[in-house]
Length: 68
Image 1 (cartoon, rainbow, N blue to C red):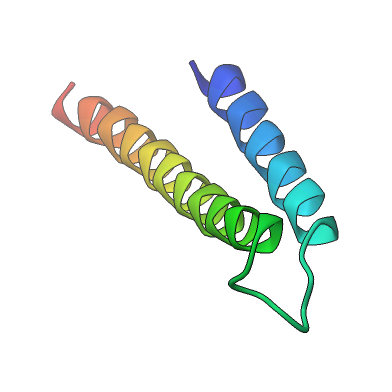
Image 2: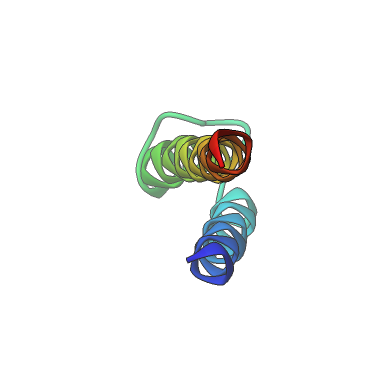
C-alpha cells in the first residue's frame, strides 16, 4: 500500500508539472489556461490528501505496536 501511495504522489506531481507548463500567466483564467489552473489545484489537493493518508498509516502502525 505504501509503494502504491508513493506512485500516486509521483503521478500527481507529474500532472502538476505538466499543467504548470500549460499555464498562460497573462490570462490565467481564460481558455485552456483555466483548465490547467484547476488541474494544478486538484493535483496539489491530491498530493496533500495522499500525504495525510501516509501519516495516518504510520500513526496506525505505531499505535498497534504500543498496544502489543
